Length: 454
Image (cartoon, rainbow, N blue to C red):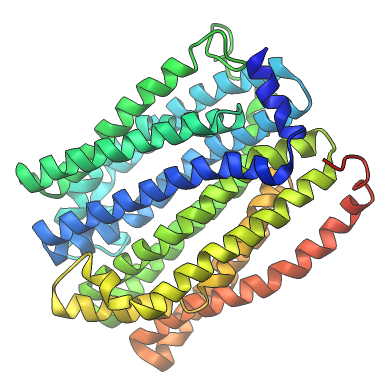
């Protein structure tokens, strides 16, 4: 079968060409998504005002927390599917697809229900003030109402990549982004529906893309396809999904904790405008980091398949190429942020106070940006091969062990700048910590390196 041959190519094609084949669509999709976020925030900032940008920044922890639950299912299941395809256990891979659908519905609905009930207290805890709470509330009410769709959309995209269809995953994202931009311009700019219109545009575009994904996965000619008998949850499959998914879940939920803490620190030392500056700096950093996420997404099915097939030299070759590409991308992003911070900030606002704070924040936030790519790629690598504890430790070391205490202590000496300083310092220490751990763990794979040279 043609579809089965596509899966087998993961263990046969030259690794460099394979990574390009899988990473390029993922990078295009991720960058397009990031550019949409910039356009979204730019329209909100220009049309609604600087307080709306600050209110949107308050929603970042919510978005991270929702993504954490989505990643627990989507990343966990796609990694398991890649390994099973490598082992040529197609029946189990099929049931993993069905369990992915069921888990996404259950988790997405429960998250929506709980968060809508306690929305205001949660937003206030996240750092919302009297000025920013209305904007954050309006945005999240719509986003949470469509939470099941969001979880399913990202989960099915991960499954498409694992099944050897990276271009289809890219098309779904590009359609979502294009539709999103059109709807945002219509709802926010033309109809003046404010921040609620931006949220509605997001949910509607993801709903349309999900319909197309489900149509693709309903084709019985596909190696993995939706059919009767695969949706009932199986305890062993759920355990495997969660065992892998706990790593990205903790990464995303830890990011949620960090953003909550950072928002409160920025409010404490710089007010609502400092939160807006943090939102803008984060948005710019994510434009470049989305390229790296595309690389790691492209790496995931290749590493998972070859690990399952015990082709360890191909697995390691994919890792080294991914590290080199990720580092080059963020080195370019670092150079631009050092040279043109004000021009970057001006995309989001013309308010002089917010503009100055954002430009200053971009420089400090991305001071050692070029080392972040390798650390993220290595962390993702351990996740791809099922080394969950190592992946969790590397992720949590950067955010909880280093960043959190620094973001508390540094402002005591350097006030608002101290909050900014904590981010590059923790990035560099985490990078220095990750490299020796990787070198220590890959020694055992070298002995298998002669098994497959292609």
